[in-house]
Image (cartoon, rainbow, N blue to C red):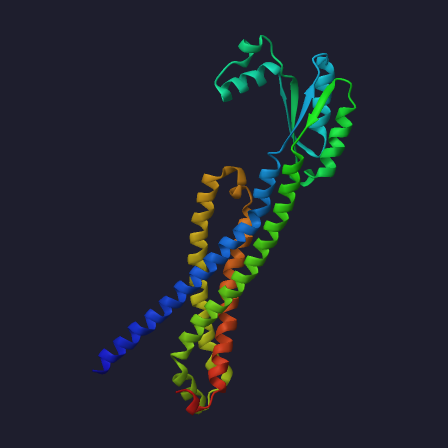
Length: 291
């Protein structure tokens, strides 16, 4: 009979530990996902910003030397990411592929201009910088016109700021929820042993002596949960890197490694603090308050 009861208690204990580990792993995994989002939010925003193109239309009278000199000076500028020369023939061919018909057959000539497409680095994509670039390039006698989408640039910059704010706010909220969830799981685990805690206290054991095995056990569970969360995050990082290679996640091993280390440390710190608080609470209760 006693052995059957002991087996039941052992199964119950293992089940309790298992649920705590899974809870910790899931919560840390969600925190890791949020961390990935925060680390790559700027990268994603920068990718969109760098797709904005400033088109410099060139007069037919422009000399090759002048065009090449302008393109080279732009390519060497520290605020420019890339430059691409597009001839009027290439532009006509692209329009033909997009629209499916040859407009030159109808018109009898090519009305398009040679142009240089310029993409700025994300940090420099501001209305002020674009106006400055447009003004300086327009001074060239062989430049016909400089065009870019002003409204899109203004909208993009304002939206990026709003999204960054909400990502930070959501991260703070989810971090608080994560701490509360792990704390709740640990408290339930300690609650199941409240009578053992009080019995040890009644026979003269110090609070530190009673608390120590509970803290170490929770830290071990936190470590296991953190390792499971890191493994899951590793798969997510690999999948995102395969699906969106432009983010270059695996090209930033220090950032990813730092995130994994943070998840591991959080697993230890949160479980340690939660267990310390939970055991202290039951140590301070009177015997009749345990029921």
